Length: 313
Image (cartoon, rainbow, N blue to C red):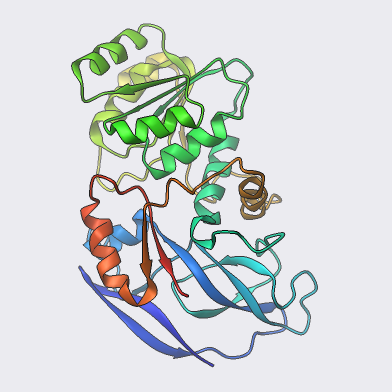
């Protein structure tokens, strides 16, 4: 059957290409896309920060199974499942495909893959009851971290950012303290906290200032998780990291996890339980046909922008 898919072709340029999608192979299912998130990975490619052309786009989708391969047992037509690329229809391997237990009330806020990244991160944080945790950066992924961490038995969960609205959400999601580091009061509070550093620091801002500050806010022997994707070289105080004996973690999706565990499926369960709630985090919704305009908005990131999604129907 005919389908359409997005390809990035150059900085700030993309095409919606028509393609032929065959019937699914014996171990595949065919899925009709309903919604898919706009990740900073796509923004970086579209903007030219991470040039890679031509390139397919998308990895945060959800859709409906429309055809089932002859040897597939665990999925059937009408099931909702995770999808991959920004394509109207696609075939995917069924073996570990994350399956929803029921149709989501709002597919646009049921983004499985980013939640699975936080599940992966939680393994590496190696949390102990009573830990004091600092999350630096309350963007989309930072706030998902806050939602997950707030359900852990922590003594403190402190969150920093420069956007008051995002900090208000962090407090709503369970932060015990929020700090606006763009204010003199916030900067002074961060200096005070450095005198009693944290067991775990999650750097989720992805900017030079936070990665430089993060080591000084992590206690000797503590865990510093570089959760954000830094697109440029950074300068850090390696002497401090060495003398404090920090355990520095790179919480990359799919790296350093137990590969016998399906993190995508676990993310589905946690969304369905309400542990992850994306309803207030998805701030911009765009029709699939308007994908180029959606990408320009994602690059500019207006003040109220947290997360954008594409809707296919």
